Image 1 (tube, helix red, strand yellow):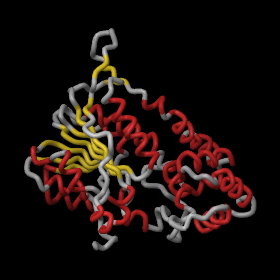
Image 2 (cartoon, one colour; image 1 turned 90 degrees about the vertical axis):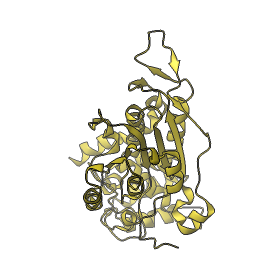
Image 3 (tube, helix red, strand yellow; image 1 turned 45 degrees about the horizontal axis):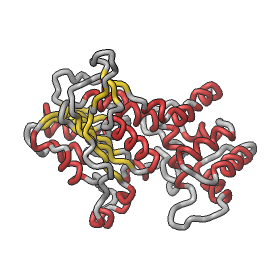
Image 4 (cartoon, helix red, strand yellow; image 1 turned 90 degrees about the horizontal axis):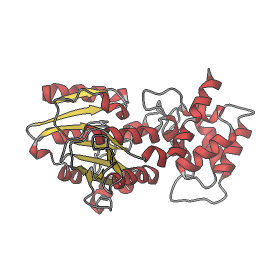
Length: 336
C-alpha cells in the first residue's frame, strides 16, 4: 500500500484510456493539485497541458513540471470557472479534466482547516476566497446555517445542529473544536462508520469555496472550449457533485442544447455523445491501495460538433443551490 502522504491520482488509468493523450493535443487539468494527471498526460509525446488551481500551494509543483517540460506545460493560479478567460484560440483542446477531491496534503494542513481531526483555525479556504468557515458559523443566522447543512451536506440533523450553534455562540466564538463538540452532542443517532462531523464540514467547505457555482460554470466553459471529438471528464466524490455533472452531461447529449448559430427555428442538436450513463468506479484493487477513492465516480462525454456558444438550463435547474451560496453576500454586509 502506498504512503497516504503521497499523492494518488484517482482512476488514473481509466481517465487516460478515455482521453486519450496518445494521439496528442492540448489538455486542461482544471484541478492541478499535485500534478498527478498532468504528469501522466505529459509522458505522452505531442501533448501539452494547461494546469489550473486556485490553491497557491500548487505553484511549487507546477514550477518543477514547467522546468522539466518547458513549452509543454503552463500553470495558472485561477479558479476553473474562469477557464474561458484563457487564450485558447490556437489550442487544440482535446480534453478538460476535473478531479473534485482534495489531496491528503490539503486535508492534513492545519492552516486550511478542512479536517475535524486536525487542530487549527476553522478556515476551509482553498484560495481566492472572500471569507472563511469561521465567519459562516459565527455570523450567519440559524435558518441560513440549516439550509447550508441540509442541502450542501445532506445532514438529517441540520435544524438541530444549526440551532445549537447559534445558542452556543452567544457565549463564545465557535472554533473547530467547539463545532465538532456541538455536532456530536446534537446527533440523536450515531453512525459509527463515519465521523459525526463529516457532513457539516463538507457543507461548510462547499459553501466557503462556492463549489456549486464553480462546478456549474466550470462545466459550461469546458463545453465551450473543448474541440470536436474532445472529452470532458469529471471525477466526483459526493452525491451533490455527481448529481450536477450527471444532469449536465445527460442534458447536452439528449437534444436539450440549442446553438445560437443555428437558424431561428430553434433546431436542437446533440452537442455531446454520452458513451455510458453509468459512472466508472474504482476497482477493488485501487480502493484497497487508496481507501479515499471508494467514493469516486468518473463521468465523461465526447463533443460532437465545434460549437462554442450554446444554451443550457443547468443554472435554472440548480437555482436553489446557488441561492444558498448567495447567503455569502449577507455575510459580507455583516462582516464589513
